[in-house]
Amino acid sequence: MQPLPSSITLDGTFVRLRPLRPDDAELTWSWRHSQRARFLNRGAPTVAAQREWIRTLPQSEFNFIIERTDGRAVGMVSLLGIDLTNSHAETGRFLIGEPEAVRGIPAAVEAMMLIYDFAFNALQLVRVWGTIAGENRLMLKWQLFLGMREEGRLRCHYNLEGRLQDAVVLGMLAEEYRNCALPRMQSLVQAAGPAASAPAVPPKEQLNS
Amino acid sequence: MLSDDRILQLALAAVENLNQELDAGQKLEVSPDMPLFGANAVLDSLQLVSVIVDVETSLAEALGFPLSLTDDHAISQSDSLYRTPASLTAYISSRLQSAGK
Image (cartoon, rainbow over all chains, first blue to last red):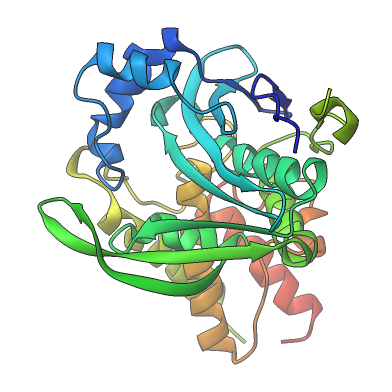
């Protein structure tokens, strides 16, 4: 397998996903230590450690900053563990760090739509999966509505908020994405304003160049 | 047939449910005309989904059949049904009337 280029940008109508860079360290560190990120692990202890963590991320991962089209960074999301042999990958590190900046804007939905489009269409994966802390009810409700299915539960898997919580394992197959998730995500994107066009994704041959 | 008042109650209850998940400083002032989504909105798309799911669930229990708020009919509305609880109520009421329910 040839190495995947981790420097791609995915453009949507309301947001774009651009590569996470070392100079995002201070901003993303502040997000990861906010109350809103209480269901994610705390990550690096200092900004310097966050910068080093970003600098040494594996090239096989796609770690994105979610930007509004005016360039303001509002969150982050990643596609990890890309296994082209077994045709699956994991979504993770999903966080809207600037909630005030995305009110009324389908930033979270479109960011996930771009990630799924990249995974299922550009990479032609068959399955995308992820885990969510059992007490993160809003995110669970959101992911299930958008087409993920609960596949299992890892008991007492995360130590968050001072207590052990289950990890809920969610997964989606390519067919479910096309038949269920994509129409729902498109409807939510359209709800915010002008009809959204299909997200632009680089052709597969570009990924292997 | 559900009255408009009953539908509005369901919509407002869905926003109240969301409030229970929000931190103290993020609580929403719930009213029929609060701007849910779109211009000057108070919700992000994650929170909007919470409201949609709860309204759909409550409607299914009250009506005895499912009513999608994100299907082709809903998408095709020229004016977003998610603007306010009142606009959501008007859309649901109109759809039930046209279906003779």
